[in-house]
Image (cartoon, rainbow, N blue to C red; front, side, top):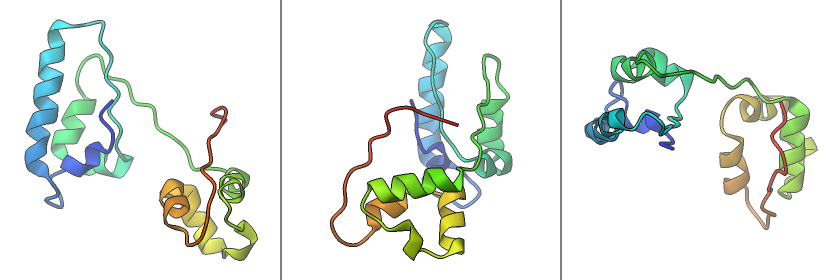
Length: 122
């Protein structure tokens, strides 16, 4: 699994040199058709970076877009992590639905509980 593939995107100059390492790994796997690779990136980065788009357009590639989290899913994670979701405004809840809920949980002040989901629901 190569997570945060957007870190090697070119359109904002973040670590674009590291893209070659990702490409090298994928090129080596051509001789191993049974090996599966999971590349994780945001849709906006795939759609706006020609190199990331080229990775998605290759043979043997499938996209698995994820939707926006349900408000109750966000509330459950926040509550289980020790944060009070009722103390958050609607804009903050909406951002957690669309962006990085994990970041909110990790950066919240005070003691917290690690939330470990038992199953993926959706």
